[in-house]
Image (cartoon, rainbow, N blue to C red; front, side, top):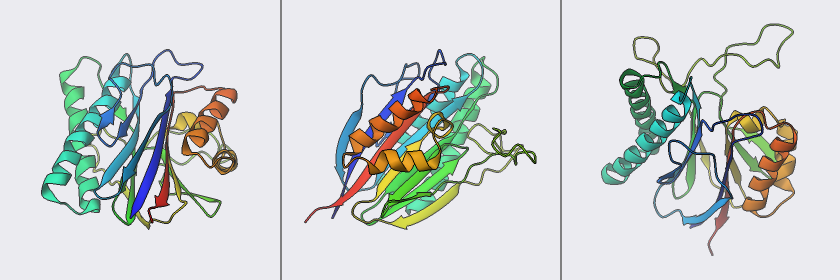
Amino acid sequence: MYQISVACGCNIGRVRANNEDNIYLNGRTLEQINRGLKGTLTSKHLLDTEKCFAVFDGMGGEQAGEVASFTAARALRAEQERLREYMMRPSAFLKQACAAMNDAVCEACEQLPYGRMGTTAAALLFTAEEVYACNLGDSRIYRLRDRVLTQMSVDDNEPAPEGAENRKTPLTQYLGVFSDELTLVPHLVKSELRPGDFYLLCSDGLTDMLPNVVIADCIRQHTSVKQSTEHLIRAALQNGGRDNISVIGIKVSELR
């Protein structure tokens, strides 16, 4: 049987006055209005039942970003409770969860005075022997296996103009899109678990500050998932910390 060790950090960064990120730790979320985490949350989980983790990066004026990311995280919690009740297939659950989260954010758009809002979503669902990655937007999912870092998620951004490949471009998919505008197509990837695998969920507050080679190096330097997670956030802050930074590190081990 496999076990996962989890470490989560969420930092407001050096520039933003508010935190539009939220996280989902197998049932736990941050409050709607928060300033991140003061420390690092750690936990261990046996994979005897499905375990779900996610990062959300909200968008919108005033408090709309915070509302969107919190609304999505809360909707995911409700969907995970249904997963346990109805024993759904993991891929079907993730697609349904994306639809439910999108509906919840769209409903908040209509009910609250903030106007349009949205949020990215990057989630990992662990089963006894596999992990399913799912994303909408540009929050990312990585796997470090045998010291090689692989991006499992797909960035939902418009193509950059020629000669400006490093420029940030608008999102093409995110939670908070009405059905008459676009049909969301979540990106789904399945992978078998192996002992020693390190999975990373993160908002663009990390990836805009650190190239992949630095991200991989921060993880490789430590055997502890907590130390790797803290190193990643520290490095992003040292490189400017221009956005909120959310990081969930997950390391797989085998119980003998």
